[in-house]
Image (tube, rainbow over all chains, first blue to last red; front, side, top):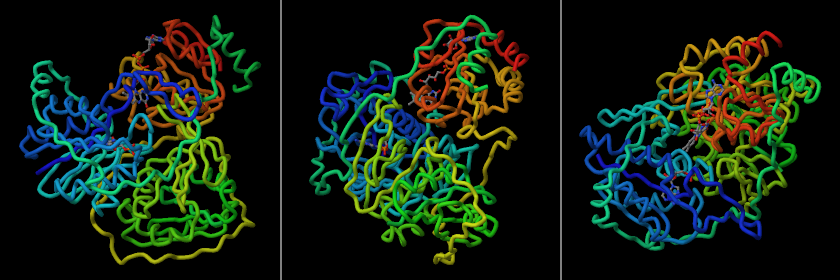
Length: 249
Length: 312
Ligand SMILES: Cc1cc2nc3c(=O)[nH]c(=O)nc-3n(C[C@H](O)[C@H](O)[C@H](O)COP(=O)(O)OP(=O)(O)OC[C@H]3O[C@@H](n4cnc5c(N)ncnc54)[C@H](O)[C@@H]3O)c2cc1C
Ligand SMILES: Nc1ncnc2c1ncn2[C@@H]1O[C@H](COP(=O)(O)O)[C@@H](O)[C@H]1O
């Protein structure tokens, strides 16, 4: 079984971001970039399936510029077999990514696509479901447990109010939640070795003519600010404030 | 212009997020249709018809749709998508699963987690875990959205409102790409996290599942509050996964949110910023949670909670 893992390069989740001076975009210049956290869960799961003998090959793909080599190398160091950079400097949106992935899947023919459940920059949470829809494949979203048996994937999904178990016919698209696993740390020697592995490069336009995004960002601002807290000295003071000042008790 | 709402329900009643969506729909167009998918829907149809603001209830009712999956629901919607300017739902795990698939099959983009409607194609939504808010405008012919309900009052039942009911065509059987097997749902008499008037949450410092329940339970009981948790508390097994509040959990919007022993990471606070009043109880005076709270106690939660429980 061959697994494809799409991996996005995003601003590290610990970093505070700001709007650009003109208030029309997010200023990400010079910020620390990392693999999207959920995508690390996806790679980890793919590698575990390979280690268990269920999968034969783990291929990663990232859409973006040459800078994305760092997240692909990270995945190679974790244990993925191969990495592909699909080159474009366009903002594609989840639908654009899903369409390019579909075109790539027609060439690579994986049996399973393991993705993150959402990008932590746009917080969209759409590309996996969109890809499954375009391919007409089964989808398992927000997955916290995965087992594969013959031609079926059994998943446990995190849903409002609890969990749900589904069985999916392969090929399928699965999107990882954080509780799927704990991604391994990358050891330095592995990273050095990964630096030597080749990364295949494809021009996005050779997969598909790219269209302009239909959804435009026209402004980026800070949310309404709140706090800092008024520090109180006792539970009595707190109850008094909630009853008489805020009127919420 | 007509709006289609994908209803989220539990087989017997509509979720509050759906009733909030009905209220939000008034800002998007002038005719609201509600789509119900499931099996044995008579009880739900009666409720849906009376929802103030709904003019038509579309029904996909068939035995094989009892635990309908996205693979089978999406084609039901794409068949009728062309008649609508907006197709949306409240922000729930159900709509977030189904609607992106619908958007792709209709060849339009999707805008998730709308927090403010500026006009039918211009919306505000949080990005970067709510650290920033972006305003986006869509040039697509159909808008596919999820809308965070907390700003909109749930639409009420009005017996005088009797919307038309129309049954839509359903294939004789499902695609069988995905099959529902089982579910574990916490049943609780407590209010739902996303809609509770008071939410009290605990973090890693609660120490164990037993201590989490024993400490927070009695206070929640007294306040009729929902119990939430940080991701650290959920990962450690102190609280169930659906109690997680934050960027990747539930976004809450109560009148009162109390965070006990939660440091206040941006991923956590992303889920609580719409609360009216935030209280933080933390031993560390420098904990980031105090930067966004309204009231703070620098104290041990194990001292504070029993005192609070006795006093309220
Ligand atoms: C992609 C991603 C998504 C995430 N999504 C979420 C999310 O949705 N929700 C979420 O919550 N987190 C999320 N996280 C995790 C988040 O970054 C934090 O790690 C987590 O919120 C920390 O939980 P905590 O505050 O319980 O623990 P800690 O950060 O360890 O804080 C514990 C706090 O308890 C205080 N304390 C200790 N003992 C006591 C006591 N006796 N009385 C009072 N105070 C005490 C300490 O001073 C400290 O401030 C996400 C992380 C990533 C990478
Ligand atoms: N530029 C990209 N390169 C590779 N994968 C991507 C990219 N953008 C999105 N994805 C995948 O899509 C998932 C999330 O979808 P979304 O939140 O819609 O962006 C991510 O976790 C990735 O697996």
